[in-house]
Length: 404
Ligand SMILES: Cc1cc2nc3c(=O)[nH]c(=O)nc-3n(C[C@H](O)[C@H](O)[C@H](O)COP(=O)(O)O)c2cc1C
Ligand SMILES: C=C(O[C@@H]1CC(C(=O)O)=C[C@@H](OP(=O)(O)O)[C@H]1O)C(=O)O
Image (cartoon, rainbow, N blue to C red; front, side, top):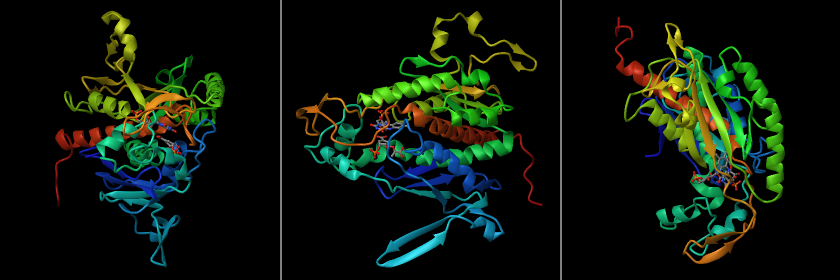
């Protein structure tokens, strides 16, 4: 089953890129946490297509409506904002969504409508004679589903599916911030051969998290290095003009992480984080802490010295033995250049006839790293909250369980 996180905090999603909507259900959110729709929306705004001039020209507003799992006695506040309307069999129905309520522990459902589709752009991919984009899922999905596949916009394989990751991750990070002050940010550290001169993991602290997020939001592309962001923006623009695309690397860092979370071996937080970050669309690498740089070091260079008040450096990236140390969790994720490009390529049809492939139409991201950060943060939040709940369920360290 395709579930993100779990078994304690889990996010299920449904919906294809050109379908009517993306639906999300969150299981296992503990009760008593205030969730305001207006606090979740900004995370979706960072993910949405059309939100950054260096992303896809598809422009979705991606407004979220919450349908369940929240409550408060003051129903005017609970219902005071969004509505959801449908027209079926000639009749119209409209109802309120939840705007501001407390989690009840019941499943939280949410919906985001898809309203800016150009499905005609995908006719060249239709049927057994349909063409295959090298690097996208067209060929494998067609054969895996025995031809019964929604080819429009990449269907379920589209980055659009990560709306669910971001809704589930937003609720998780709000809960983690309310409980421990945890903050999770990301910064683009490389575009093509251009690299940043600074690392988010070296800069981010609980004290500067708000200011750092503001800088990231204002930069040309979300990076803490403003000069790099400008140069990278130019490189992306120029590459898109030539019909090509660029790869990128994104750092994702959590601060305020409680220590001792995570299993030690086969379900360790290292396994799970590398899985969810490394498994995101278009990702080809995921490093923790100093990552691949450790290969060239000696133990004496690489070990983080420890004093009574903690680790004095962070090559380990917040995880030892798959368990959090309380240091910032640091990961660096490498993205391939977008596969759908406007240059001629060698390919096949779905029934394996050789063709010279050329894209007829379409709206694509020229560098997927530009919009990827918030989804990496969300996946990290989901895994962290799941580990926290697992710890609370198994550590027998809490208060005695009393009814009266
Ligand atoms: C932020 C983001 C945006 C993306 N946008 C596009 C896009 O516009 N066009 C495209 O062909 N692929 C895009 N992708 C990549 C595809 O979703 C991905 O390559 C595809 O699902 C196949 O998965 P794989 O590359 O992990 O093997 C995007 C990925 C991310 C992370
Ligand atoms: C729709 C989104 O991004 C899409 C991700 C995507 C892909 O192949 O992953 C391909 C493009 O789809 P389309 O051709 O339908 O516009 C992007 O625009 C989104 O992020 O919500």
